[in-house]
Length: 185
Image (cartoon, rainbow, N blue to C red):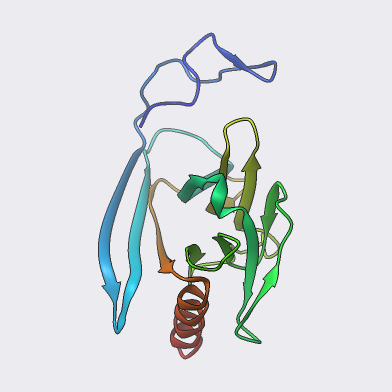
């Protein structure tokens, strides 16, 4: 993977810490369309490989992101305990419940769910949402974190994520089915 900044570049006044353009970190994904009887669900298995020889005490993995046109400007959150969608501000930021973005008519929506959320120690975040006004775009993401003062272990960090697409009601039903399926485990 490439670093966010090239050596010598700055972002918001902070200089890049990396000494090369490309890292030794690797990302891999396996994508499947459909999950059990949910044909409108896309399953992602995402793996980040942290190489040996590097010392990190914190890692933040933005495992999956959905950028969509501004027409998907209705922000909602899915609450597994009720099986319902609730209105959600456009943030920006993260919260602990799955995010759904849809159009006003409810004919098009996309939602994110991960049975691997929340990351231990980060129970109030993990599902982000953002409105990029100038770019006329909206975004959801699914973020995982790990911290260890002695250093995070090198190796693979794997996450399983599901994206539901369809009408707002299709997405709600799919998220409810996923939440129920993984609650049994």
